[in-house]
Each structure stands twice: as structure tokens, then as C-alpha cells.
Image (tube, rainbow, N blue to C red):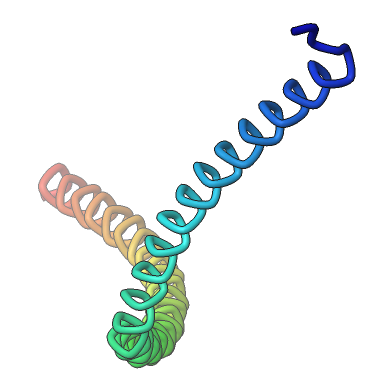
Length: 130
């Protein structure tokens, strides 16, 4: 029995085709397993979607509340700034007025000292004259 080269080539081709078929089945099985996992993940995501939507809506409401609080805090801060400016202006004016009064008091004090010295000089002269 003599095997011809063409018969051997046919056997090799048949074996290669069997290997290709076997690998195709293995890949197909892996793909099927992967697709089943993907389907389960999609189902789980679909089940979680309403809850995620609720969480996002709640987050939206909370962010709006935070924004409202922030706006109120900004308004309060603006009022505090305005009051602070008014107090600073009032304090500056008061310091100026106190400075003006104390300046005048220094003049009064100097005049009183002068009057005291003058009276003392008059007393000293009267006692020396008399």
C-alpha cells in the first residue's frame, strides 16, 4: 500500500480543519459564557438603574439646598461686610472726634497750668508785699 502525497495532504488538511473546528467550538463556548456574564451584568444594571436615578435626584435636591444655603450665607456675609464698614467708618469718625476733643483739652490743660502759675505768682507777690 502506497500512500500518495495527495492523500497525505488531504489527511493533513482534514486534521487542520478538525483543529480549527475544535478551537472554534472552544472560542464559541467562551464567547457564550462571556455573553451570559454580560447579560447578567446588564440585567443587574437595569435593576440598579431606578435606584441610581433616585440617588441622583436626591443628590440634585441636596445640591440645590446647599446652593440655597450658600446664597444665604453670601447675603449674610455681604451684610456683615456692610455693617463692618459702617462700624469702621463710625470708629474712624469717633477717633477723629476724640482726637479733636483731646487736642482741645490739651489747650485747656495748658491754659489751666498757665492760670495756676499766674495765680501762684500773684500769691507769691502779695505775700512778699504784705
